Length: 138
Length: 138
Length: 138
Length: 138
Image 1 (cartoon, rainbow over the protein chains, first blue to last red):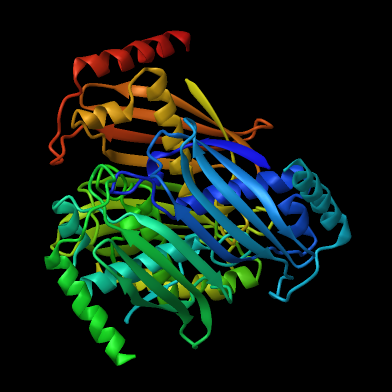
Image 2: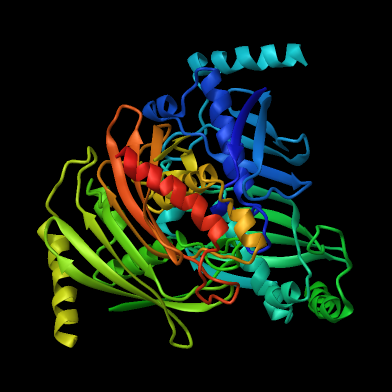
């Protein structure tokens, strides 16, 4: 599990006075990128090899509204991994411990034409190593 | 069912060359607002009465990537309605008929303090009328 | 001059209850893309030839706040054109005629490495034709 | 001068492979909020007293493109201050020292109806103290 901290920006609020729900997917992405970076899988390296990673499925459950200037923690876990997809799950937690939202995203792997491809071993093995370590620590 | 047309903006793309997945929730919102407007339920009227409508749950399944300059149609259907929540479902369709994505969102109703409230009859009845008509036409 | 209509989205508002200032640059972009399309210069065609068009300078003056659900008109004019840059100016007008904002943007032309390049005649001539016609009609 | 660090997000890129120009205004806002927080002027306190701070003028000059995963520093300086407006200037610098962009923003102060108001002394004095200290340190 990888934790990323952020602070809610003014632009992320809407006229209801709370964070617009679409922004949570921006936060999930920050968490996902950080998780993969920790596994030494850089999106820029994937793209340089012509490997794309389109999002194919997302969901989010909102428990309590994030507000401007809140300090938040995004906890990201890799919950499913194969050579053709990865599923991440997320918790967004306010610094006082209140759970703001949970969510999940599924990425597939594809070439530049959108054709499904299998993640090369070099990257898969790195993710797999972190994935196994995470499961053991649970 | 209410249809809204839009054209994909450059800013909506990301470096994979397709629309970033978070933007579909902006499109769903356009569809939802248009649906409610057709039922003569204006968000500004709700807010003027202190009725908020926080999003509590969303999901999206991405089938085919939307690209810059694509003409798209957002089809919105009210699929569940009660005095405490409404669930909308969506289809995003490219003008050549290709289904790009499906999704759903659930709104609750709440007061300014986030406490759940029941939608007043005046608004509920208007949504209910459209909801019934839609079900009959299916 | 090219006019584009749009309706303010909920997501474009912030907790001050008005449109966040950064969104006007999204609207300017819609106007710019529409202007170029009318001149038969498609951004996708430019990119297919390896011609990029980075923004190098922007400004916006906000006169009156745009609000949720406002119907707006974005008026775009090409005010300077050469083979190495184009300057567009914009007016955002509410449907009742109130001027909401004015602004300008400057694009340069560059190759994929960011090196400045000159816009090929085939595209320049199309923009120049519209540019001349606009100046005469003023 | 107040420095804020951030890392470029995937969602901030566009199909030209670099950060979309509109995002710099989100970064400027982060810097502005941090500057005011350091002066102990919290936007939430202002809003609680019915003091709004609409943006009335912005500009940005883009020197070099920010890219995904870049570590950036946003340097914010308060360059003009009166009871009716504040002008901030910004530099966005990549961690290797390359200047990516400069910009400026002007805020006015207004009540909930958009009518201009004068910033109360309690807030003005705090900003003025930091403003003076900054000028002396230059």
